[in-house]
Length: 128
Image (tube, rainbow, N blue to C red; front, side):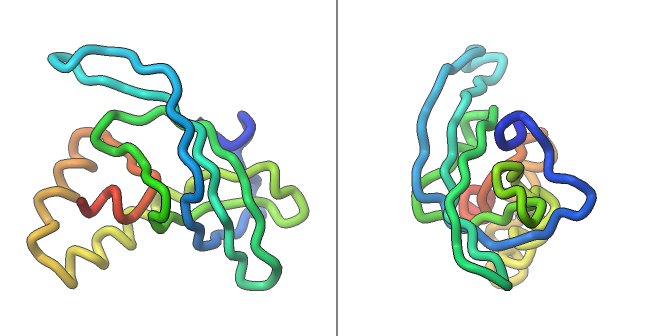
């Protein structure tokens, strides 16, 4: 679930990103019991203090949280080790609820995703 199989370290920084590629992998489960799918998501990362870079993250998600190209996301990475990139799901959740404040109609969607354990990888996917 973490970039290249490793989690960003304790000195990790958070940066905004944009999903630039989604590779759809294996799908498992059934519609009655919930389906999960594996994705390889390539993210263009925009650090505050440096040049942008791309990173790939392998992730397993429920179908309702599938990422799409162009969506806003947040990642954590260790400076100097850009291969250790992971989605910053706490920051994504915070941004999702920021969108709810601007559009209260999204409250039910966002609450439902988080209540059922869907851990979206993008702010927009959360707020659909």
